[in-house]
Amino acid sequence: MKKTDIADLKMKTLDELKRTLLDMREELSKLSIEEKLGKAKNMNARRAKNKDIARVLTFMSLKEMGQVFEEEKVKNKSRAKGETSH
Image (cartoon, rainbow, N blue to C red; front, side):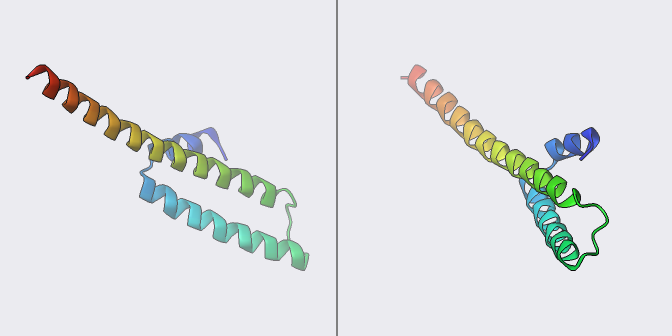
């Protein structure tokens, strides 16, 4: 995966990342089948695809954690405003 591809992953939404993950897993299964049949040209492609999948999963978890943290910040701000108005 190129640096530009990684930058694109950072900009994608959670739903887009899920779609990307499904596509990558399909490609991985095709690569596995080709390797078992002896048709694979690049023997390291499967390993590289596994790493790409791990990157996508990492960005997905970061996005999910980021949403949780953003929700907590909003709750804390609303609580702080509510406490000062008493």
